Length: 270
Image (cartoon, rainbow, N blue to C red; front, top):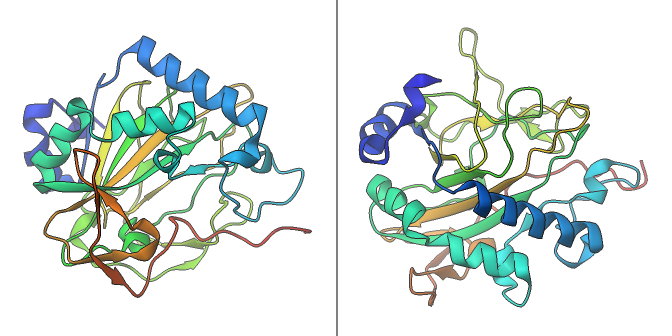
């Protein structure tokens, strides 16, 4: 993974080559601990107030720790205020705009991924955002140390040069999402290893995903943002309104496709 680790000043060159760059220590230890505590206290107090309904069956750990989708749209909550404040934090947004130019904020998410939780099969984010004519960019912030054992992200460097790829069925035992990209022979995903506070920036067409968290006592929490270039003329309606860096809402054309990132198995009652 050393070829994905860069200084902020070298991010663009590596991004153009690989479609993904990892920047160490963007957020400090105390700041990350605060984010971790706030989101975890919130979900454990009442998962229903902000948790996204993925149709997860009762008894599944992801029913207890659902992902948060668009927490920045709930600024009356403490997690919402954190999500809003960091979306355009200069430490993150400087790199975003270095990679894709002037940008809008399109989405915030928080994943908890406790021990035994399934991962998300290989996919491309712009399959869901459908930003045109360019694509989206993710900023994936590690809130815990993460690696293969606790379900850290896997990436396929260079896959950002591909068009959106056809999807097949995912492994229901390993993925909470129902569809997956099946890689051609000879192509393998690379396992990332991140420290809490690191940020992985990656292109909307880059193939990525994760396996289940097989650890016994390690969460793999992450705060995730998606951005699209200001040159975009449409995006899936789910991401409307976009946000400008000064917090103003902005509207562009609606893409006829797309939706929430990750179509899930319909497992209620199963």
